[in-house]
Length: 259
Ligand SMILES: [Zn+2]
Image (cartoon, helix red, strand yellow):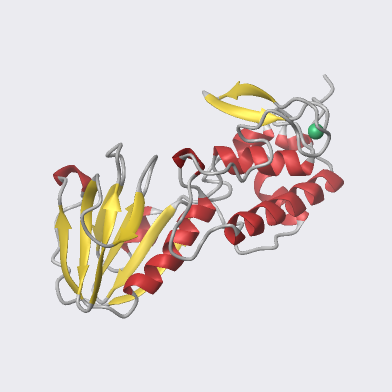
């Protein structure tokens, strides 16, 4: 599932693929992909591509195209791929295909400023960083919930998903069920350093024009996610279920909170 760094990589790639190009058509091959009323984008030029949380926003002359990739959505230039749900056709460039086997990805065609209005409830962005421990404490420190659930709450901090939260907590040596409100200053600093290290590394492993998902069977680039052994202490990685999602952790490196 695409999280912050995958969507960021797609946004940077989209800018290369269609920045400054004129749209000749937005083809919908699957009628359910468009979640808003239709607007004709023909003739508009792509002025920018950005990311907000897990949403990708293409800014055009007089419209915005917001893409949410959900579980299995991907963007790829070219034609004729399997599971193409929509295709952004461009003057003098290859079309960009929205590919999605699970059919959960969404397209929203909006008026200028529409994406910001829809995403007004999203929390602040942790990327690009670095963000100090005090930044994280200000956003998550009021949550009496488990730290992992607070990290994934899009209203507190935008863009972090299940994989990023597990990886950041492992790097910070913090237990996922520890209450966010009970962290001390040293632990917030560890969380801040871990988030910066994870996000930078995850961005650096993305290739320019081929965004990689672990679910596609490539080499696992993560430290605890779907790992059997902890790369730091070589102890067994365990998983626990939180909010219906698997959390991977090393019980040796991430001791459970007292009480
Ligand atoms: Zn360990």
